[in-house]
Image (cartoon, rainbow, N blue to C red; front, side):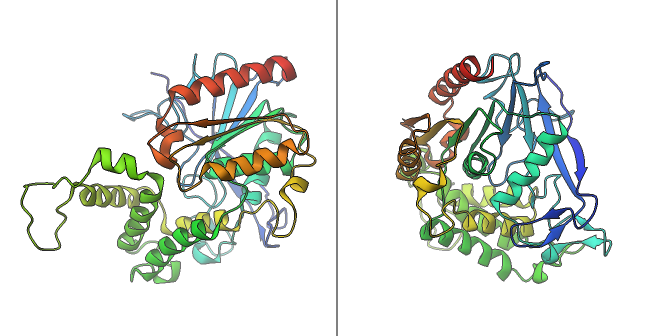
Length: 374
């Protein structure tokens, strides 16, 4: 069992050093991150892993005392796709989160109290800018790859546009180049659930009662979008939790109801309600075309080799959104490979459907390292 520790870097030591996309200024900013493997002497084997919505810097191995490893442990480690015998893997927690990097639950140095809703609204581009600060701090001039799924895939796509000369490749999994009205709508339901909780108190609940009920409902709604109809039918069907007799009341009789309640309640113990609002808003703002540009124009300066992966049953970020990026890249002669994997797991497939995904990533990274970095 390999034990790792989360590390912390504080940057932007003046409130005037980090300017966000909104024009707001923020500082200092603390970044939580972990590293796995060793950086080679040429510093040519570094891979940045960017996490999904509720993820964190702990992507692999174990923290001392933990029974479960990091969230992508099956993908990161010796002999695994992100092979730590070959590559130096970095994973940092995003700006606006509550998992070690500065966010609304952090202490505002000006007031000595948690930021709450005084924390400035952040974007995917802001997250990427902070990640670049970490990469610069580590002395890495060019990453072998930037890789991530879902919100991490959005960050990986943004990296190729914002810093086209800073990576040899990018792996974009189960993602899109902008949120659709439907994707925004699901997030708005979740935000409204949080803000309707009487304990939310306009975001000023720190040191008081956390808005568990609203945040749990938000997570329940979100979790439905991560699964597929087929996976829910296979896992639960219409099975009753206790007896094969209907009670004709509003208790949780179906297994799927109890499962959603469990997911909601376990979530509120580890995630901050305000971070939920900020990160969903960041995803909703995400639009590489900035509303009026052609997607082909956006990718016109991309220099990296790209791998894009989607899943057949992902209805939250359906394959057509990945395919739109592929077409736009091909229009610019970008070296892009596309794989659509068959899965019944829905959007969560990138976290659980490992066999074919592992082969695709492993072979792709070996090719990129051989052709571009060695």
